Length: 155
Image (cartoon, one colour):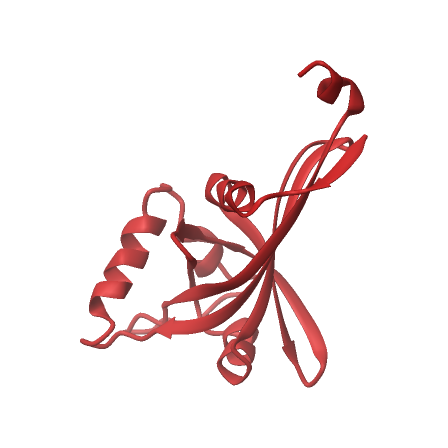
């Protein structure tokens, strides 16, 4: 197996091809990691959530890190680390177009809303939508991939 650094374009292609990431944020020097579904557009990732610990932490400390990976086998994989800045897309006139863009990109997957809307315990009935759209502005990204040496030799 050979491990190599990925180019910026290879990192972007890996991010574009996936829809699940692990989002890391920090509160009081304590890390918190959760899976999120996302949509990728240019230098931004768009996501959706309901209120909870993740949003509380990101609102207080907007720096985030994501891991996006693609695993074929133990010896053939890609891994991209993204440093990002959280921006909440509040339901305001000013951010209306960005919210529509986020919704349109996320809605390309038929079940886009499930991970962000489902909670592990019963929730009270509400009359307004608690759903929060947000973007993660990509500040930097880097990646590595692994390939078997035999597949490298055949190219």
